[in-house]
Amino acid sequence: MKRMRSLLWILVGTIVVSASLGGIYGRRLDAAISSDTAQEGGVLRSIDAFAKVYDFVQKNYAEPVEPDRAIFGPEGSSNQGAIPGMLRTLDPHSNFFDPRTFARLRETQEGKYYGVGMRILTVPDKMGKWTTTVVEPMPGSPAFQAGLRPGDVIQKVDDKPTLGVEGDAVAKMLKGPKGTRVRVTVTREGYDKPLDFLVTRGEISGLSVDDAFLIRPGVAYIHIANFSETTDHELTDALRKLGARDLKGVVLDLRGNPGGLLQAAVDVSDHFLAKHQLIVYHNGRHSNEQRYYARSGDRTDAYPIVVLIDHATASAAEIVTGALQDHDRALVMGQTSFGKGLVQTVYPLSEGTGLALTTAHYFTPSGRLIQREYENLSLYDYLYAPEQNQSAPHTDIRHTDGGREVFGGGGIKPDINVDGSSYNLVQTRLVASAVCPTYLQCGPFFEFGKYYLGVHKTISQGYTPDDQVVQSFREFLSRKGLVLSEKDSQANLEFIKNHIRSVLVNMIYGEDEAQHISVENDIAVRRAIDALPQAAALLDHARKFMASHPTPQPPEFK
Image 1 (cartoon, helix red, strand yellow):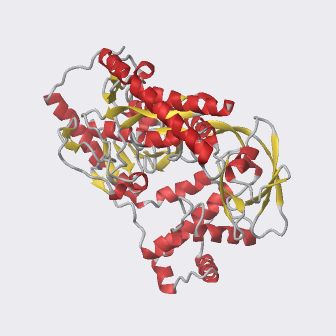
Image 2 (cartoon, helix red, strand yellow; image 1 turned 90 degrees about the vertical axis):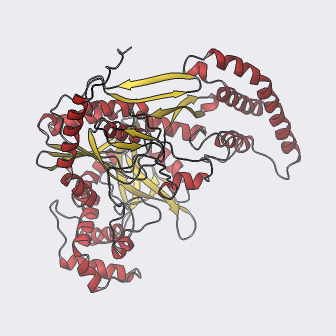
């Protein structure tokens, strides 16, 4: 009964927070106070109705009702249960987090935790039992330094079997205090006996700026995977190492970036914009308008920038893209972005739970609200099929600093469209996978990589596959029931060699080295490099346009 009262108070607290967040997020408006007071009776009546329904279900349902499941939903679920169901009626991004999910969210925001530093994947084996495989030891992590490889199947952690154990439980076994040791036992293709690795746990920083290198002399490639508390520091460090003052151009890759912290997006934009330029502003029902300006500004000679985006570029990543596009600071290439213009504030609740509630809408410097329509879409279609549901009505027309038209609603439209799928039918079949995001982590090339290293054990860092290796790859595919004809092999020879090389380098020398190979062969990146002169001309035109069309100075910072 005590547990039930606790759960009901979480529900009450969530409803009250949802109804009156003005006092928490920002100064409450006088008009809002009277409105909230008027609604108080209705809120209490709703709580009473819920309690009566729950009590009836608890007493009369055919099987015992678990309070956690009824209130929170099944563990790990994001849209079931009383509280998540209530929030789902508001918008797709307001969400309730059970204790485990909320702890993960905080780890993501902080950008660090203590453990061995490897991504794992747990799926049912042929007998239906959970089996955990190493997907990727993070570069420089304790797991990478100890010698663990992608494809290793984890059998035991500190002599405790992992077969049949869910992935979250295995991950918890691998985490622990800094400096402690954990024994990881794996099986590896090509080895007769299990292999033991003694790994010393350390602080794991999941880098958000996960790739930054000179892809051409004077041209930097920078990929930002998400926006966390460490992103600004990571970008500062990356630009310093790349020699920012001597750069002739930057390709900023935000493809697949789901967003993150608003302040991190503001800080990243500040690196590339001029001092005092507006980055983003937002307002909501219970919050005054808040504007964010570049405080430090770009101290270089303003090298040209091309930003790469796709349908999965969202939220904070769209803030950066929108700011750079509106100020004509960058040329945007790729596909129309996701279209998330809602600001969530995260509130910790009791019992280790948390609430992410939409408290405001954000707008790009030109005044664009880029939020995509969601009213008449299922949650699945909204989240997982944005490219099929992006309306781009040209009714909200805005203008960049250089006078170009840009449009609100439906995400950010690139200046130059680049099709996200550059694979032909044969290439698509070779990289296709239902459970992993890239060919480096599963699929035909990954499986061949495990087989090849099971026979040859290792490769040199400058390894390049020859025709004999390609023939071995074809024979391997044939044994797996996938036939690759000689004609198709020759027509896609460079593609096949590059992908075999990337996978093998990834397994032996790590993700960083393999990623450089993938980026150098990425058609969109090549086109972005070629478009840098166009980005330079865009910026030059905007400066001249602004000089002939002066605008009022921004207000002083508070």
